[in-house]
Amino acid sequence: MKQIVLLRGVNVGGRNRVPMGALRAALEASGLEQVVTYVQSGNVVLESAAKPGVLARDVEAVIADAFELDVAVVVRTRTELAKVVRHDPLGELAGDEAKLYQVSFCSERPDKEVVAKLAERAVEGERVLLDGREIYAWFPHGVGRSKLAAQLSRQKLGTVVTARNWTTVKKLLELAQ
View 1 (cartoon, rainbow, N blue to C red):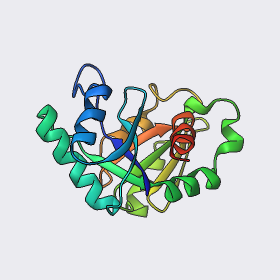
View 2 (cartoon, rainbow, N blue to C red; view 1 turned 60 degrees about the vertical axis):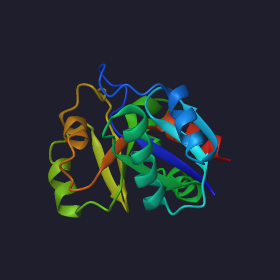
View 3 (spheres, rainbow, N blue to C red; view 1 turned 45 degrees about the horizontal axis):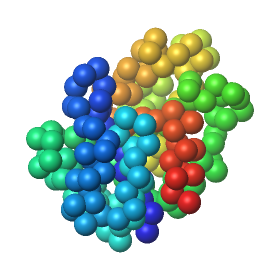
View 4 (cartoon, rainbow, N blue to C red; view 1 turned 90 degrees about the vertical axis):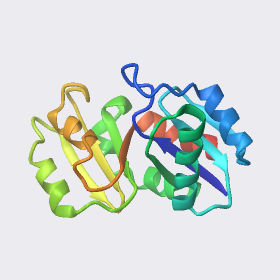
């Protein structure tokens, strides 16, 4: 089954350096098949019969062994990612500005009240919407300037969270077809 593996916090600001070619090689050496990476921020599409939670732990172990890093991993099946793209609750707001539209993928469903408190930090047109294990967010003034985006990335949700912009989300689904 095609699965999408999302590494949290790699190759950001010179920290947690994981070369994608070396990652592909390490994952293939561990027995995973049809491993494809996309850009340098820790996006992998691969074939695995393992359940997503088991696959996440397996990939974390491969990264720890190969790179001596403790990197959290979130996994979605192709079917789950297709549902995320079909849902697209903020697409009308985003229009052609896909880089300002993010999906935060959570390993577990975050508490609605915690997400609501984070949403209180939204300013001037920002939007946040929780749906299952995904948090859709619109940052019209840029992700880098947003206090809300910073809070989403600080892992205050009680679960592992990693965000991708809408362009990346759609490209990962395309690669998983």
